[in-house]
Length: 246
Image (cartoon, rainbow, N blue to C red; front, top):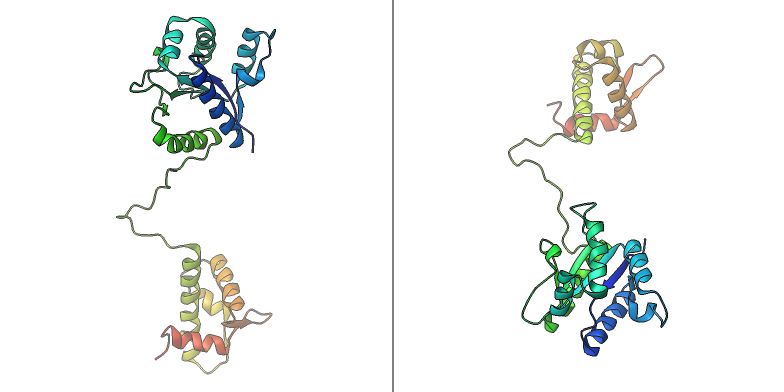
C-alpha cells in the first residue's frame, strides 16, 4: 500500500496554534501518513519558496488549517499562505473536480474558508470534544478507507429470479432421468438406447451429451462403449426421490 503524503498549510497565528498543528501532524504520521510540516522540515537559511513549491507539487493531499487569520491571508494573497494559495489554485485549475485540497476548520464559532475553497467539503476540528470523530474521518479519507461504502445494486424485486447454472444443470439431469426411467419402465431390457434418448429428448444432442456426463458423474447411470445407458442403484433411488415412478 502506498503511504499517502500530505502537505500541511497553516498560518503562524500563535505559539499555541503552532503547537496544535505540530501535535496534529505528529498524530498523522503515527497513523501511517507522511505529513510534511515546516516546523521539522526547515532550518535557518533554507529557502521557504522552494520548500513550498517542491512539497505542494509532491503531496497527494494538501491540508489547509483554516483559522480566521489564515483565511484573511489566503484571500488577500499575503505571505507564505498567499503564495501557497497561488500554487494550489493553479493546480486546481487543471482539474475542476480535484479533491487534492481538504480544508480543516480550526476557528471557534465560525467555519470560514478561503474564497477559492467555498465549494469544498471540510473536516471540522473547531470542537475539541468532537476531535476524535473528525480525526478518524480525515485519516479514513487520506488512506482511502471510508467508513461507509456504496452497497452493490440488488435484484429488481419485481423481476423473477433467474436460474443459476447449478439449478439449470439439475433441471437438465432431471429431464434426462425422466426419459431414461420412462424408457426403462416400458420394456424388460436392462439398458436404454442412446439413439432412442436422442430421438425423444427436446434438448440438442450437444447439451444431451453434456447432461449424460453429469448424470454419470453423479452416479445415476453408467454408459458403455456404444453409449448405451444403464441405471445404477443410485439412479433407481433418484427415480423414487423425484417421483418419476409410482
